[in-house]
Length: 513
Image (cartoon, rainbow, N blue to C red):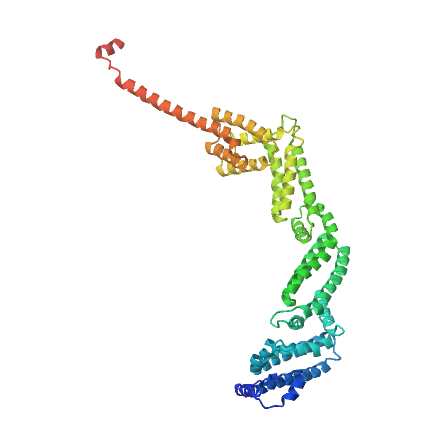
């Protein structure tokens, strides 16, 4: 335990192992004395069994005497010097205990196993015996006034204040707390009682005190957006701290405590700032706010409500700029005004709010409101009529959107607005009339575009909704085929008549002259 640096040759190791083995298997000793020492009856106890008990007793005594020396040197230490001493001795002690444990493998396999199988309490393999003595004769003594915990917490606070510390010191002490959590029923099973009582509880309490004071001061001296950056940084630091030296089981409780102090306690101020960020289109800050408030229960609900009102207001204002008299509103300008608001806020939902379903629902609700009830639409049927006229303009030959890809995108945008139309039957009525005109007048931009639009409507509303439109389109196609067939047959008949007519005679030709 005290001369680990000297090392041990294989020959020395085997000699010591042999001594241990011979002692355990020896039957020569005073059984009465050992029975009295171990507190057991004499019946059924062989000499070899009692020799094992005697060796176990000597090991116990050795560990205790060694730890008395270690404890005496720690009496006047505190804070970081105490941590340095504790970790140094812990490393040396556990390393030495693992060597001793190997030397007494025979004792572990036979005597210790037999005693445990017979139900004897407080009997451990040699390494666990060493840990139990450390806990009883060193750890409890220096932890009596929370000296060890206090030293660890001071070091962590220094790190939180930006100072550089030896993280290994903290990690080794915490690892020792975990190792000392011994389950009496099953020493192979991890027990975190020592870790939680000695470190986790006071650590979480200190964390709350530290961040409560810091956050209140910081938000008082800085803007809400600056505070959000600070809170984001602090949360990341604490997540990193868990990976550096805390036990993984602390993650949930530490993150919850930080979210409560850094986010929940200041959520009203952040929620009040939301409208200003929306108005100024500060996407990065909106995303930061979303990520912070998504950490707490119901933290996003006020944001979703305000976002809905914001989109609705923006939509109404956009339509108002393009609205003319009831019959003079330009369908293209009208639909473009609706699309501009939707596209802008849909992009914001995707980027700043990570496609959050609650914000998507707020966007849909707001769009449904301003698409159907706005200054350009005094009646419920006006918006679907304007949208149908907009689609009619796209699908006519006179449309300037000549590129097929551009036309397809324009039709997709039409369906984006169609999604929010409440009275879709009105749209169908106007659209079918305009489709009929295009087909009869042969003014459609292309049959493919017409078919694409009908397919989109069918996907959105089902087969029944588009069955009339499809029949119209099919009837016109059939009519074209019949006309083409009739023309072909008429041309064939004319050619046949010409070929069978009699040739004029020379006399007739002369008469004709």
